[in-house]
Length: 103
Image 1 (tube, rainbow, N blue to C red):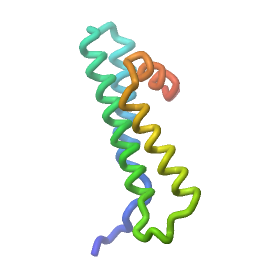
Image 2: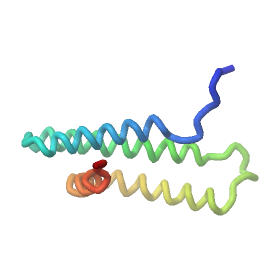
Image 3: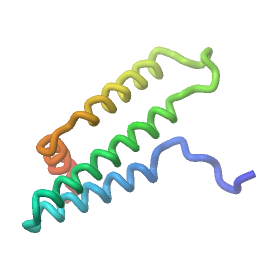
Image 4: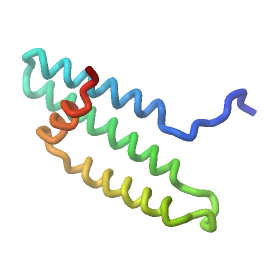
């Protein structure tokens, strides 16, 4: 039996995503090669997909009787986000990172 309760949020995945965004932005500010920027953008995409997958996993219920309209809509929204993030281009990832920049 663990001494701590299990999390009901994807805290670690969120931290990883924030760090990958930070890495991308710092690399973007320093003039580096396009290949390095593309690699960091791909890491941001992977981190975001991992976060979305973790959120989808948290929305799964153990009993089908417990599903309600809100959980079904959340699951559909997350599935659409996952599909969108799989097709994001470099420019869209860059815009996302710029929008989520922490001042």
